[in-house]
Amino acid sequence: MEFTLLDTSLDFNSRTLRVHDEVLKQEAQSNFIGLGGDMPPNTEAGDLGEELKRLSGENKKLREMLTAMCDKYNNLRNQLMEYMSKLHNNCNATGSRKRKAEKTSTTTTPNNNLLDAHFNGINSESSSSDEDSSCKKSRVDDQHIKAKNSTVYVRTTGGSDTTLIVKDGYQWRKYGQKVTRDNPYPRAYFKCSFAPTCPVKKKVQRSVNDMSIIVATYEGEHNHSKVLEGGGSALNLISTDQPKTLLVNGNEKMSSAVGHSHKQPDFHKLLIEKMASSLTKDPNFKAALAAALSGKKPST
DNA sequence: CGCCTTTGACCGGCGC
DNA sequence: GCGCCGGTCAAAGGCG
Image (cartoon, rainbow, N blue to C red; front, side, top):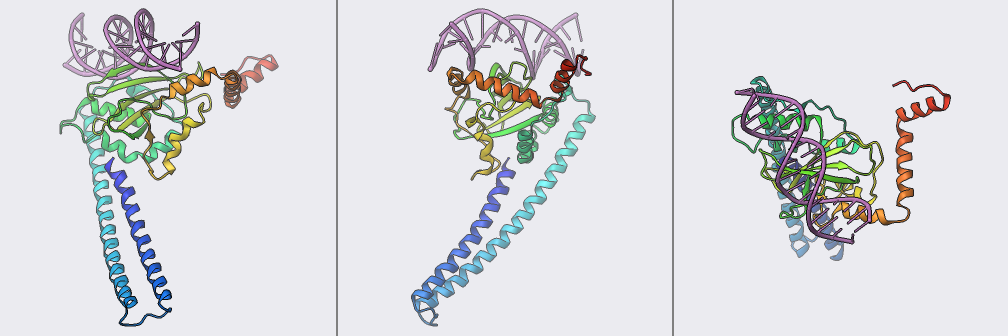
């Protein structure tokens, strides 16, 4: 987790240094213009010029240090990845306990793939650094789950926030909560409740390392489009000032917003339109419909 | 009143 | 077969 954020902050700092450099140059130039455009050798403008040179040199040194730090960071990250890979293989070789979840093959939505790409570093880190040196079964299982499912990591805006609401643009119904062995924080189970036939489920649990991070694991693929226009805002936050980090406002309950939408007179119409839209995108449905219209049985 | 969350009970897979 | 564990069910209560 820290690696990803470090990456961002390093890049940010590098850009900041460049910006400071430009600002200093512009300030110096404007001062020179204000003093007549030329830079007399023994004036205040001259001092500014020397100050500019000194700061530029300092910025250059800082950039070099930053570059070196980035290189070291990348090397360390690569080493960690290799180590994790070896550790994972060793765990599998010793015969880990494989549970039901490991067998389930799931699909991922495009948005979730995007998020996975953003949080690849987190995925390795969060499942490895929290426990003893021993290779625990549960950890291996968790890695398998996260590798096969779409896992999204969400940083909450409040550290004391105890809710597990992740605004991802879909409508979810909580059907269970469980405290698992390897994490003191409860794991919540959600089903997609927008369409009755939608098979998607998600598990939401706080990270054992950092309780401000929520880990959401999605299983299945939505057979409908997104429900809440505003609910998709969480995903859009990837491209804001806080890249690779989603924000969750613990005070906002998506289900409450959905509850209101149910009371709107146009909701049923919207529901029908959404379902029709999703069905027309389903090739199986198209085939079945074509077969029904032509009086033949659909080939499955 | 309808939908939601909560939560204890239950079920089934897995290792021993 | 037994116990552990994660996942699911369903009744009860809350909320708008």
